[in-house]
Each structure stands twice: as structure tokens, then as C-alpha cells.
Image (cartoon, helix red, strand yellow):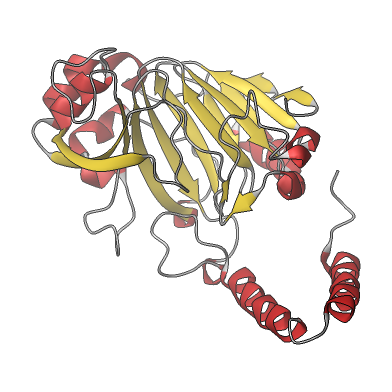
Length: 315
């Protein structure tokens, strides 16, 4: 089991001014209740979405198990008409299926050309634009993407982080979200932006002993709730019911800090990528030394990084 468990604060009726002055600078998750999201929370039923979305084909993840793993890729990509996806995702058992009658579906909407275009629900699903209002808690020029998500009940997404701030808008259904602080990255057994620990509720501590030190922040999202997820905060999401959500990502830093080829919002900042490349070269140089010397100078490097780069302003 993970270490300390902490609830994500829930606040109702938060104004733009209060969010920007008092909550945003803290760089911590918070659930916002009572935000005006438009009519989507009542209108976006299975029948309505099927009708509005029609036969537009969408690329989806299909998994035979509930816990999806992006590292081992325990799912397949398939294509379905949008109306068929919505209908199947709302089912517990399927008469039509790709793998098995209890397979799980997950849609993460894409841009017209995913290699060049970001997802924006207002462009990919224009008939839904009038139903949803994004929280106006950031400047329009900071907007990056709005990602339409549909999940089967029981589906669990892998623990990962994004490099941009975002609002997870729970339009319909219910989700459980578990978050981990960026300061606990050392306990999460990272592979790129993702954690290798799939079962966060019953982890294999023989394989992942440090995971028990990670502080766990948890919340439940109901229809109409908005979760603020600051950049770099790890999050693991379980759809407790069939549901529809929209993630709105925006740039917290100047645009030049981000990778211009990033259409998903999950490529590390350009300066961080350069630093990682330099570190790789340094490690290759250290590998030329005998083990005793390599170990000694590697430890000195770690201490130097901690002294020069670690922040003393965070918990």
C-alpha cells in the first residue's frame, strides 16, 4: 500500500480571481464544485452523443483487462464509428467486440493530423461546442488543447504526468483520481513520463519497495466537478462508471519552453530534454572508469545536482 493518504481539497463557488490569486500559486490539486460548465452535464447522454457524433470514425484503445499499461502496451488500437463507440463503452457486456465480451474502451480524442494538430473538442466535435463552457481561469493565448475522453466502467489509466496545467472536467459519470506529488517521483519507478507500478491499490512491494513512501492524494469526481491538475503531478484515473470527460490543457510557462512538436502535452520541456541528453553523455563518460571510481564520482555528481538544482521551497 502507498504511504501517507491525503484528500484533495474540494471548494465550491470559486471565482477566477480567487483561483488565480490564492489557489493557482500553490501548485497543488484542488476539486472545484459549482463551476458553470454549460448544459453538457445534463445533455451528454449516450443517445445524445451517439446522435451528435454520428458515424465519424475515431481511433480508440481496446483492452481485455481493466488496468491499462502504456509501457507494455496491453491493449490494441482499433477504429469505430463514434456512435458505436459510445454505445459499446456504456455496456458491461458486448454482443459485438474485438477481443472479448467484457473488453474495455477508451477514447482520447486527437487532432485532424495527430502528428501536427492538437485535440480541440470545439474543432473535432463542433456540434458539441455550444454545450460546454471551459473555466475561464487562464488567458486565451495560454490555451493548448481540449481533449474529449470516453471510458468504459472500471477502466483504469496508467499513472503518468503531463508538462502542462490542466482542468479535468467530469461531464458525466464518476471517476476516482489518485495523484502523486512531483517531489515523490523517486518512489514511482518511472519509465519516461509513466510509472511502472500498475496496481497502486495493492502494489508488489517486493518489486517496488520505494512505492510505499509515495504520498497519495485522492478524490472522487462526480458530474460537474472540475479537478485542477498542475503540471508534473502524477495522476491515475479509474472510471467507476461509464463517463465522459474533457481535459483542458494550457501553458503555464512561456511558449518557447515547450517542444514545438508536442501535440499531446506530454513531451518534456526543451531545457529538460537537453539536460537529459547531457546527463546521458556524462554517464557514458563515467562508464569508462573502473567500478570503484565510477561509483565515487557518480555519487559526487548526485550530491552536486541536489545542491544546485533541488528546490528548498517545496514540501
